[in-house]
Image (tube, rainbow over all chains, first blue to last red; front, side, top):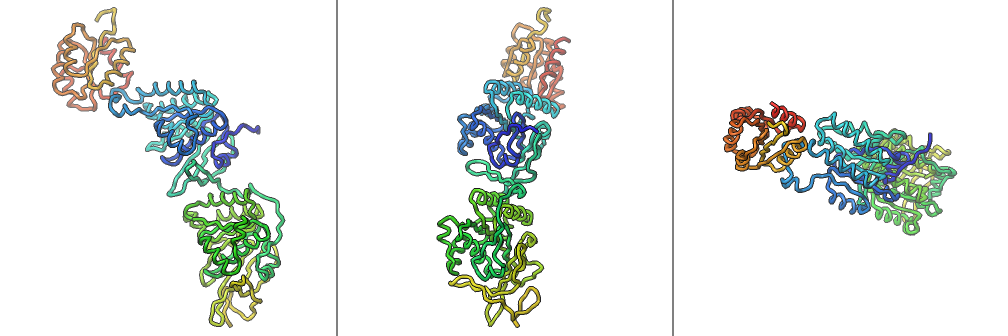
Amino acid sequence: MQAEERLTVGVPGVDEILHGGLIGGRTYLIRGEPGTGKTILGMHFLQAGLDAGETVLMVSLSEAERGLRENAARMGFDVEAMQFLDLTPSSDFFAGEQSYDIFSAAEVEREPITSRIVEAVERVQPRRIYVDAITQLRYLTADNLEFRRHLFSFLSFLTEQNATILVSSDYGLEDFDIYVQFMCDGILELRREAAYRSVIVHKFRGSGFEEGRHAARIANDGLHVFPRLVPEMHSREFVPDPLPTGVPELDEILHGGLERGTVTIVTGPVGAGKTTLSVSFAREAARRGVRSVVYLFEESAASVRHRSRQVGIPLEDLIADGMLSLVPVEPLRMSADEFAAEVRGRVEAGDVEVLVLDGIAGYALSLRGDTPVPQLHALTRYLGNMGVTTLIVSETDWLIDVAKVTSADISYLADNIILLRYLEREGSLRKVISVLKKRASSFESTLREMLMDKNGIRLGPPLTDVEGVIGEPQRI
Amino acid sequence: MAESDPYGKILLVSRSARNVELLANTLLKQGYRVSISTTAEEFAEQLDATEQLSLALVDLTGFDASIWPICERLRTAQTPLLMLAARKSPSLDETGRAHGANSVLVKPVGVRELVGLIRVMIEN
């Protein structure tokens, strides 16, 4: 298969989904309801042409030139350099001077519109053309058959210009764009459901592409697309050495530490010390020169810093050095794909090798009721391939049913499981820690008391005087 | 009808200037000569002119009952009369024909159909 020239769409995430970008000289369709960002994508496409030194032409059938230019300029596009052909009715049409009813609009408007397009294209000789919205041509034809013929000849004319063409179509009450869909070499759909936007590729002749929905966001500078994470496409060489946890007795139980590239679930009821323990691990790694990041879905960075100081493990210096980052994530604002893209950025560009995700409940919120398992699966596989040591905090109910140690069915994702519980002893609640699972090595299957105070985190000796059915240690 | 001028002159009557303009462009392209009126007064004046009309096309929209007597004059002169109405209405249809219309069409009309009908009406 010969390598053909790929053209950037102007949005990096979209190029990635298309396995390199558009194939030049072909026609592509952008579908979507009003307000989904079709025109913005068209602008990125034209801007990419300008950046490559090409002449570009925008043909507008739905929006007047002035509004288009203003909105595009506000987003930072170089509108002065773009050629525009505005085919929208001028204001004097509305004022009545131009209104007529003797013949249909189709008969009266079509020839002038067609000849203006032909004239503009032949004069400008653009390498990239964007037509917004091509379904408007339907109103210039008497019936669907004529629309198809007209459309076909219009698209043929444009293709003969050796340009790459993007057309947009509006969903309307009638699906005229079905004809356009058949004639185009590729179809991209932009969707918006509640607060979440996505991009889906439906067709792309001559190339593979990433199927399914990919998260998107429209920001002040245009469209951003976050391709779904495909773990198999990423890997990094690493040595699976154990990393010390910062709590010597815990390293003993683990017979070394937590190996690089593994996923550890730290689980237990509220207040049992999961976050503090996980942050302590990240801190220890940072102290030893391993860049770490802690994603906080449920708590503020200030609160975590405060608690860490209180147990004698201050974080400020490491944060200032850039070795440790506490990143609060507002779960309802960011979709799982966007979060995965953020993680990739830190891992690939930022050299992060230890990652804490606190916690699953907050992360699951960003998935809008979908189960977190597939997304988390992809994320943890990716992190494993890249040699990142990952801790995931999971909260359980007060009374632990060990059959359901984690709040979602994610135990299988874990290479290691650390369980924190409470024990009543001498009239007070004590924190207890045990290791349930460890793939890379053997481990000590004892229960130990965990102490957290201003002197740091320490584990007591193995508790031998406690017995009980699995799940709830009981005082003897 | 003079043999040297098989097309002749068509009178176009409509309250809408743009309608008249579009009709005129279409018919001029076909080889007809045209004269236009946008009011009842102008319409009547055109009929006072000496030249015999080949056909009159009257768009009824916006005119009141004062149009009918003027249309009757066309019947007296045996000039083919084509009327256009904004919607299909049996009563308008009937009234139009009663006042001399050979045909009452509903707008919008297809260009080709209109040109064809006019040619047939003039030839007969």
